[in-house]
Image (tube, rainbow, N blue to C red; front, side, top):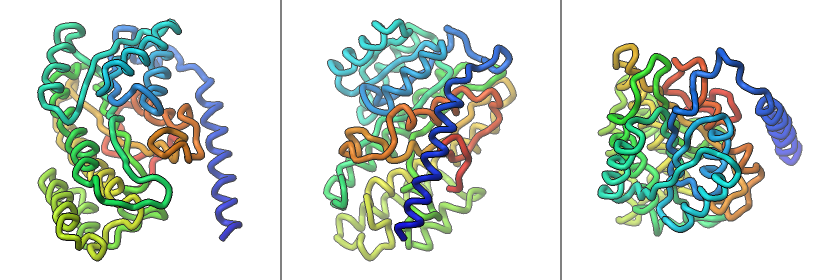
Amino acid sequence: MVGSKEKSKEKRDKRLQEISLLRTIPYSDHQRWWTSETVAVVTGANRGIGFEMVRQLAGHGLTVILTSRDENVGVEAAKILQEGGFNVDFHRLDILDSSSIQEFCKWIKEKYGLIDVLINNAGVNYNVGSDNSVEFSHMVISTNYYGTKNIIKAMIPLMRHASQGARIVNVTSRLGRLKGRHSKLENEAVRAKLMDVDSLTEEIVDKTVSEFLKQVEEGTWESGGWPHSFTDYSVSKMAVNAYTRVLARELSERPEGEKIYANCFCPGWVKTAMTGYAGNISAEDGADTGVWLALLPDQAITGKFFAERREINF
């Protein structure tokens, strides 16, 4: 077992080294579909992966709007990047508050008109280490799933129509996979429903999280076949993964010139406040795939799940 753990660590370290090298290679002129007028929004970006994605996107020459629920820390975070010469703006945004979302959209419309990239990074996790409390399940699902969905729906009308397409990138997790080493989902009925991408709907995803929350309230969730570690967080990310596929399918029906491409990615177990700084990946490496997806020159990729710049299974 130790041997296989060491092997997978070796493999991961090697891949992260490759990615660090790839990051040093500048995009060529024909790959750069963006200019300094291109606007990206990153939610929950006052620290950690979100902050790093803002820094990297601004480093590529985009105008980036850093958002945070806490105005003071958001202003400070944006200031650090502005002082570094980056074109970064700040606006408060609480994805749980519909009036905050409306206010943010109004401000975007007035100041920038439209946006090109939306990265949904805002999220919460209350379990650290081997803790697995479901005490805050409602908050976790409301923020990570419903909050993400609400900001996406509000921003779609503000996404620019252009030949290269606009981009939505959702930060999720391998913990939300339906099949895989990290997935401990034992509820076969839920797995079958969420894996049937052709029949998958937003209603099915909503019903799945409602079923989980109902079992939490009734105290029966442990026998419900849900993941055994980081249960509420895993379920919330499973829901975002599924919703990304539904969204991508709906958006693919838009006419040429009005396309929006939606993908999700797992940043890995990153050394940030969310993991209690227990992660094994730097914020810089964790942010990389999200930035790469946002800037993909081959824009027709949609409805996929990525980690370390490679497609992985849902």
